[in-house]
Amino acid sequence: MQDNIVLSVIDTKKSKLKRRLIDELYRAESRTISQLAGLLHTSVPSTTNLIEELSNEHWVRGIGTGNAQFGRKPSLFALNPERYINIVADITVHDIQLRAMNLANEIVEELDVKMGLDLSPGFLSVLREPLEQLSQLLEARNVQTIGIGVSMPGLVDPKRSINHTYPNLNGPGMSMSQLFRTIFGAPVYLINDSQAMIIGEHRFGLAKGKNHVMSVNIDWGVGLGVIVDGTIFQGGGGFAGELGHIQMKSEGGELCHCGKVGCLDTLASASALIQRAKAGLKAGAVSLLAEENLDNLTIETIIAKAGLGDVFSIDLLSDIGSELGRGLATAVHLFNPELIIVNGVLAKAEKAIIRPIEQAIAKYCLPNYRDNLTIVQSNLDGMAKLYGTQAYVLQNLLEQELIP
Image (cartoon, rainbow, N blue to C red; front, side, top):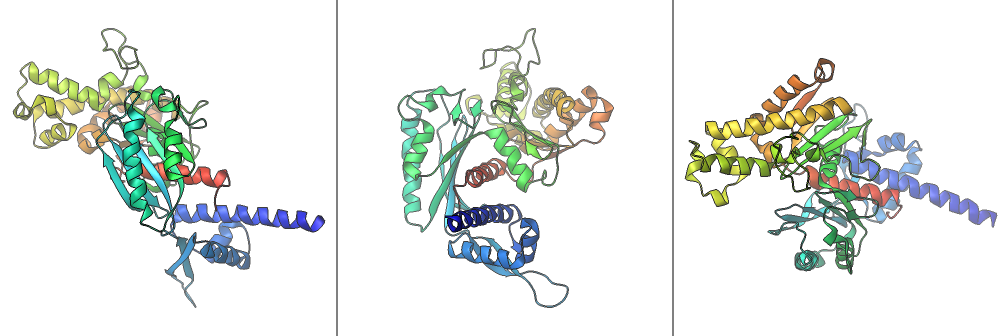
């Protein structure tokens, strides 16, 4: 009896060390045994045994040697990208990106669906077909799906896997989480898209190593991801970051899709930009955009025309950036970040959107808040949400002791 208890304690400790080792390798990409031993606070022989066991279980593999000042070069180890994958879905109001990603953050299979998130009861029925198609693509590979992550806009309760903004995803009958799990046979984790974005930035982007960061997601709505003391801030219900629904214009403001009037979404989102552009052109604005079909006007076209020097397009982006900066000033006073990362479809406008944001923050923030604040465009080339969702899945799998 006593021997069984001792063995159980040893096994529990070893399993915990394995999970920590996987987490360290995912964060750092590669490490030597000596480095891992230091990070795990265990001996080199014990770490060597852990590496051997995880290698036999196809979690870890050797990838060559590292640098050494003297003597023999140490062996480098990384997560094995060939056996285990996660399904990552980025669902927006315009389209869906389905990705199978390995543990090296590489895309193994991908499927883009020209179907946006909506409130119709038939949404899940239509979603089933591309999910089954992706599943069939993966059958030809010798891989195991260990987790599923879904990022989307709206009030997402990550603990209950419910999106309160889109109740049609929660049943009755089969919910979206159940649909994913039925097809791929793995645990499902839902996360708000802006929160996924800040996780991606903090793990792999310009926020890495920083403790107080905000990532503004200027998409078809405006969202905010926040890192406080090195940890993502999700709030009591998981809904933190809905910057787009702070009221900016109470008198004479436009009706927001949430039912309120004058929300930031109505002034500083991609939707607001398209609306303003169409209204201006219909009113006779002189612009290179006048050559375009208004029904098919895109964000990319407006940004491109601004790049060509079109004053109307430049002014539109400047107005959007100014309104956004005014809204962000409130968040800056609340969270006192050292860095703001600009993300989303409007981030492609680069300086045309960032400069007016900077000017508005300089205007509306107290000097002490803005003096040590840097505002930059993301360097992850639109991958922040996918990276963040994958990291969120692995974090949950490890914390819930579902792997290895």
